[in-house]
Amino acid sequence: MGILLSEEWNIITTILELKTTIPYKIIFDDGDELIFDVRLENFGNINGMLITTDYTYIKAKVETLLEMGYGYSCFTEPLADEVKRLKECITSEDIKLFKEILYD
Image (cartoon, rainbow, N blue to C red; front, side, top):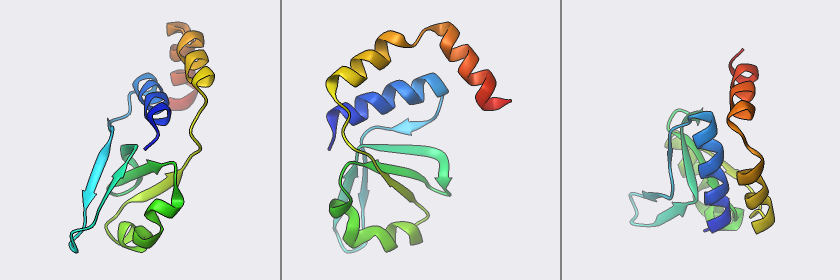
């Protein structure tokens, strides 16, 4: 699991007011389980978008995940400086403008 990725998505989803679960665990019928860095609810597929840093970790279960109504995305782990800059550069005015553009 990517600690910085989860932190970055926590910032992003707070700004965009997206519903998330960080982290998110799925237990499959065969007893296998996967833990994702982030689940974006109401985004992507019917059961949400799952975010991880490692495709090889989920590769064996991708078809099952899709059948279960999940989408998935793989991101690289951000650098600590990137997360720090994201925290520092986002102002309330930035958020307001971004939301106006996003929801227009």
